[in-house]
Image (cartoon, rainbow, N blue to C red; front, side, top):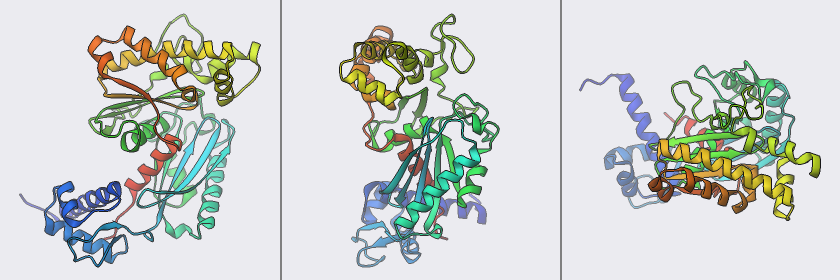
Length: 382
């Protein structure tokens, strides 16, 4: 095999990333443990650790040359930020390079705010977090950003049904201009799926479907241990699966989409004539406190969602389906109906084997996912 400087550098960077990822996920490992987990030669691992310790990125108790010493990510190596835009909220979080959350800010934001104004608000929150932690922009290594809209292969947001102020925006370049740092951007459901797969209800499985039920419906897929975007970059648009072509009009312009039956905005619109105007968390709270109208709407939503879950499970055969988002705070009131409906509509072995569960994360999954994506984007020394 002939190697060139380019291929050698790429291999070196790949090996560095494998070592850092193993250390980060475990919280600390010896050189021998790193070699076993990464399947790299001990001499290769030793050289990488020595280099990254000298650069201040890793820390080795007793020095980089001790094979039995525990290797960890250095607390002073810097931080990453996660920026999570929702339909009506913005959350910005800081984490160290070991993946530990340090602080976050959550504020309401109008869904129709222009992208440049939204990014200025996010940059202001980021600056507040850095200052509160006695850090500067120089300490920030990368940013991950979640948006509740499909992003095409060209990186442009071309659907304005949730974020009308972002239509036509090349999200990554706009974010990098606002934050002044390398920024990676993905759909919020994809990042939620990543978070649940790595740290939550899907941990230990290779295949996972994440369905977010908030004002609308989002879906993220992890297949074969990787987030699946599809050839167009827009895989997972489950919310616009047609349930009834003569059904209610959906915000996408079609009729009878799943989202028109189970999305929080649709449920609230049905509830408003008898229960008043509420946001999705307030609507869920009504149901959990015994409001029969709200309970019935959530149960009906669960049955419709179960049909869609059955179709996805029959098609993809995931090990786990995670239901998250504001409506999922209804817990078993929603999930029991999803499971029962899935048992009726899925193949028997599929219904028996596929686990349907709620989110296992305390922080918003999309925010956690944006941090995880930022960690992957950090440029290593050398």
